[in-house]
Image (cartoon, rainbow, N blue to C red; front, side, top):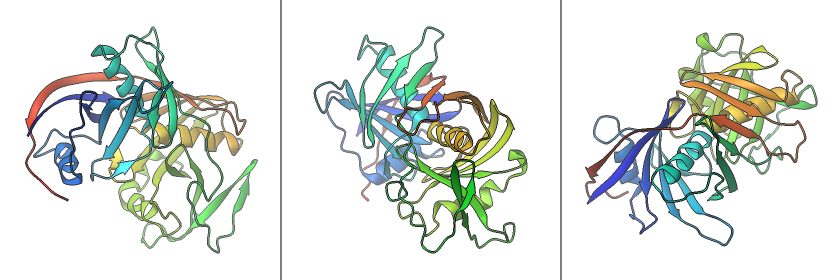
Length: 293
């Protein structure tokens, strides 16, 4: 089967975007893995599918598959690329788009400066909804919140690995570091991702606070490994920093792929807003082999 695609990136987080508005492609998990493969496929952190509106009051459905082929709830950088794609390809003439995801409806807005702002919805702190099973862990209070000490079986982390836990439509564990460049992301990220306290696995964020308006961040993403940027990870890190009393309500987030701007009032029921770039890289066609799961 031959399919058309567009390669896009948002702050270095790269995607293969598929237009399924005229019919579903019916790809298998293995075929999503093939598309994401950087040696044999197109190469991407995630595969984004643009599908028709599933309900009144919604413009499109947004479906996300990680590089391992698994479907996930949300991707912030992908949401910006999704909005740029449907606008630039003429699927919509709107600058404000309502999009259904597995975790709810989001509203990307294309701004005059070429960037895209996404209403990412309110953060989720209820541990059962993250989901996070604290088991017999004892939380450590900080600011108006708490952190959780995880034990990781690795020589570089003998002390408890302390994380703030929340969801931005997908689960996140945020860990404070002194220097993000020397953080053991490759070694500890997989251990956090698969920790028994996270039944659906988790995205592991390593956050360095530079000042109250700037953080540096690296994220080991669930099902993708470390990426150049993670939009929901940036939102989760800023929300965590605000709740811990370390950050202002508007923060620039430096990632290896570029800078994102995150804004949150600090009120639990208020939405988090993320602003950043979204760029088409190239378009093409590819022959998809007949792969089964």
